[in-house]
Structures are given as structure tokens and as C-alpha cells.
Length: 188
Image (cartoon, rainbow, N blue to C red; front, top):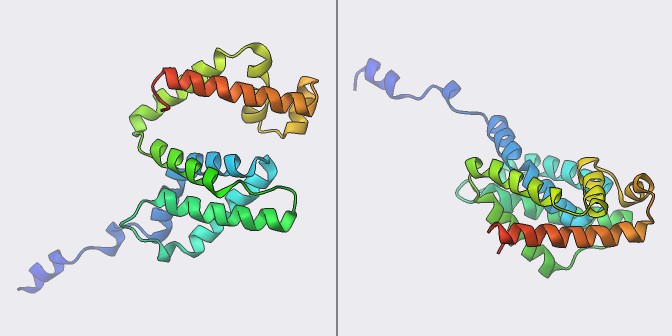
């Protein structure tokens, strides 16, 4: 092999992405699903934000341990679950969700990850349509909680409804949204 052939066969290290770049892309792709998973597990917006940030930091510190032959999402959610349990024990404000529920959440999260990016916009449109079909009192609490990123207490104050009534409306609204999404074929 000549020197010229040898030089051309060597990949330029600048052509391959750095670990930071790969990690950034993977986190960007998984951030929305990760936050949804965390909020389902934690059920407290402020604590969910803390869990998200801590998960990000732990994932970065342990990124070299990540097996690139496996999907990133489940690995990341595993870190998030363990982080959530640790923070909930530390704060003693929240109780951990039962492990069987976390397994169901994980299976749903994995299913949603398989939706292609082209279908992703359609999913958001379907979800927005389902939220738009809700009766006003249910749509209002959903929008204030999720789009306004507020706590149950803040939703209760903003909607002038008691916290328990807000929780009940959220439960019913989520059920109606799930039924709507099932009718659209998104949920099983």
C-alpha cells in the first residue's frame, strides 16, 4: 500500500461526531418522551423538572457505559426511574409509582418511540384535536396544567376550582383523551 492509499483510507477524525454531539442529538430526540415518562411517574411538575435535569447529568456522566447496539430511550428512562425514586425518597414529598405501572409506562413509551418523525406531527395534531373536543371545564384544566406548565394548586387557583375538583377533572379529561386517541387508532 502506498503512502497516498494509506492516507486516503484513514478516516478524518473531524468527520465523525464527538461523544458530546452524539449525546446532544440523542437527548434532543428523546427529551419529549422522557419528560412525559417522568411526569407520569412523578406527578409533580417541579420535581419532574429536577428529575429531568438530574437524569440528563447522570446520563452524560455514564454515556460511555451506554451500549450503542441497544436503544437509547429505554436506557435513559431507566436512569430517570432510578433518579425519580432517589429524589422522591430524599424530598419525601411524593410517593413512587408502583413498579408494574412503571413497566406499563415504559412499554407505552417504547411504542411511541417507534413512531417515525413524519408521523409525529400527525400525532400532535390528533392529540390537539382530541383536547379541542373536550368540554370546556376539562379542556381548561388540561391546557392550564400542561401548556401553562403549572402545578395542581396553580391550576386550581387559575380556574377558581378546588384542588380535588381539578384532580378529578384531569382524571376524566385524560380518560376522554385516551378514548379519542383509541378511536383514531393511536392507542391500543
